[in-house]
Image 1 (cartoon, rainbow over the protein chains, first blue to last red):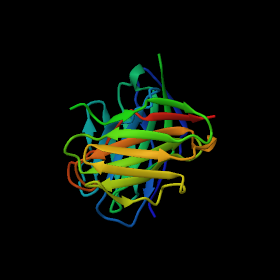
Image 2 (cartoon, chains in turn red, yellow; image 1 turned 180 degrees about the vertical axis):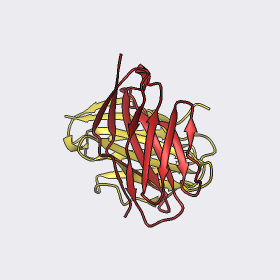
Image 3 (tube, rainbow over the protein chains, first blue to last red; image 1 turned 60 degrees about the vertical axis):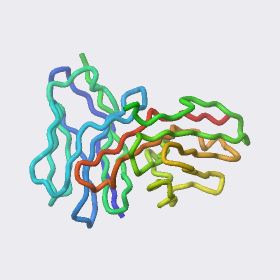
Length: 113
Length: 117
């Protein structure tokens, strides 16, 4: 069975600084997707970025980028130029052959002014 | 597009009452998912549908929970009878294709916050 592990329950970063959130996963599949979702206090789940496992190039979306290490089964999220609005819970998720999204336990990120 | 629409946004009910949560997926999306989020268990998939047919309900906690999708634009998640441990945020999500399809994205609704007292 697939598992997703986020080892950092909470993190803090100063506004305008860069922060990296960690995620590791376990799977025997070769074709899968990885996702980062943001959940602000409103509780809505917002897709931040996604990565297809067969693509070697790391995905980027504006200030958000990932470091995807397939062999190590690692998928970290880097947030550059952190903004107060980035304060949220961040979930890493795995999607594979079962067509289900398996979520990690989340990292609560606080951006300090 | 209006996105995935869920109702009610908040519901407080007494133990033993029936609760019905509703979801309208994004038009044209073939897949619909129901997730539950609690502090203890995090985000867990309850059930998902493909073209209105339930495909995997292995996450449904027990017989008190049931889900239906009578047509492509509507789904319900029903809890009868409700218990305090059912208190959670229930998310509906939809996607146009399988999770592993190229370019696919799963879109979440804003959630239904259920409190059973």
